[in-house]
Amino acid sequence: MDKYIPLILVVVTTNALSQLLLKQGMINIGRFDFAGDSLLRMAPAIALNPFVILGLMVMVSSMALHLLVLSRVELSFAYPFLSISYVIVLFAGALWFGEMVNASRILGVALICVGTFFVGRS
Image 1 (tube, rainbow, N blue to C red):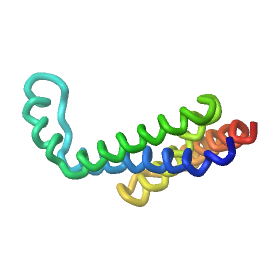
Image 2 (image 1 turned 90 degrees about the vertical axis):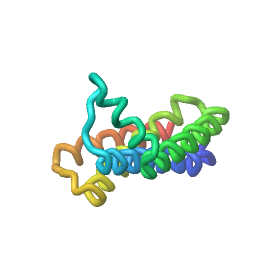
Image 3 (image 1 turned 135 degrees about the vertical axis):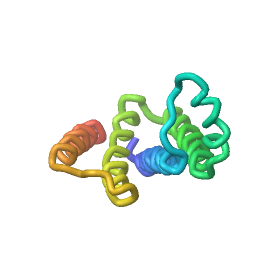
């Protein structure tokens, strides 16, 4: 199973990248609600936003690669690696969007990584 870890890490990275792109798109678009005509009014802006489009394309690619991984390794081995995307998003969110990174968030992500390490060693 170890030979598939690089492919799993590509899945993790593309998963995180898709979230970052979608977030950038929604920052560009602004806040909206699902109530009333807000969603209808915003749908064209969302559907045509280049960051949203690219984010969705990366997400679909990530899911396709994830299916490839799942066809080769046990789910209980592959799935915990997705938690590494928390690390990527935590630090990329701070760098890209200026999001707050505090000790509590870092500790939480570190605990997730320790758990992923043990699963990966099994």
